Image (cartoon, helix red, strand yellow):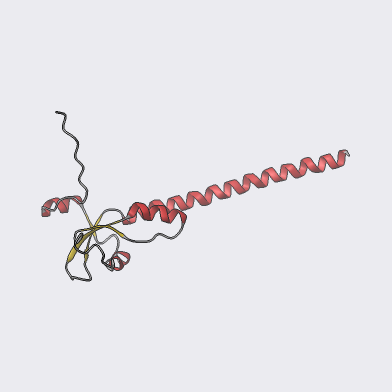
Length: 132
């Protein structure tokens, strides 16, 4: 009886150790996926200047970087445009400009300083209510 009890205690210790190892591995994998999502976000955030494939004219686009980051944590991210200077007239376009973004994501980034020099309004503007 004592031998059987000793075997059960030894087995429960190994089960606990195995559970701890599995939790550590799951935590490491989750951390890896979160870091991947953060990298995707920083790679695709911001405003980009692309050539519209339909009109062959420059267009200012913003990629849906936040949703891409969330998708990258769970699975493969899907590149899509969240805002475009050619919208709302061409809202239903095929977003073929994304091929250009996939090929050169960092080369097409527009800084806020450049937009201010060109006199272009910022893509997103936030105003505070007055204190009247």
